[in-house]
Amino acid sequence: MSVQGRIGGAGGTRIKRALGVQAALEWAFRVEQAQLELSPAKGVTEEGFGFGLEYVLLQRAMLGCKVDGGQHKMGSYIHPDAEVIAATVAVMPDCLSGIRMAIQVAELARAALTPNWMPGVVPRCVPMETKKNQHGERATTIVVGTERVKTRGKWRTVEVLACPVTWRPHPEQIASARRGYDDWWQALDWVRDGLIACGMLQDVEVTAAMPRVQPWLRRCS
Image 1 (cartoon, rainbow, N blue to C red):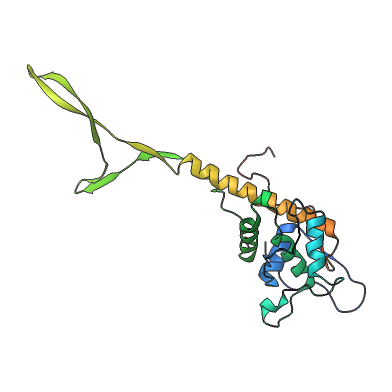
Image 2 (cartoon, rainbow, N blue to C red):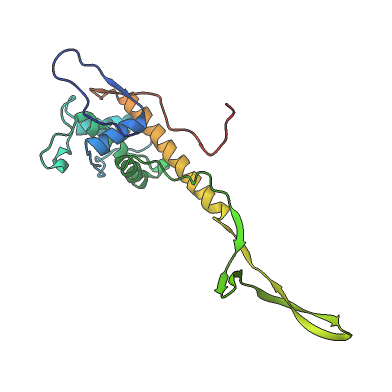
């Protein structure tokens, strides 16, 4: 679900708004229009969200002030928390596909989408090719051999025909789509842990809420 509106109020006690990591990403990239800074700071390691991530965030923030990168919005205000979220995504470690995954996470959040894991899709056995004529659509057949048969007292050679078939969509296509969803889920889990650990968000509190794990698996109610 997309998060509408800005976070934070003027004056009084600051109350943080609790958001799951997916909602926080959608707020940062869709509402605040934060941009990725994909050039890592010199000497930053990408082994995890510990020192490497904190170092990058500290380099991009000035004790809670606006994080570098707001120029992408052409002078418009971008909430500092959105910049921190974008900076976290930008240092996605190589073990989670690095920059490629960072871009995917950001673009899906910007569109308020989740990866297409092909819900409800079941492979079907179908002819590899079909052809149409005045009698309708028919499966294409091929000759796979010959046989001698006796008809009306005479031996004849007849062709043995077969219909090549395939699975559509192929099971590997479905498996690949679901691996992609799982990779995205692992990336969001990493971002969530990093944002909670860094403690640099001013107005947003990232909760433990996560998208469903392997939603294609049926679970007992």
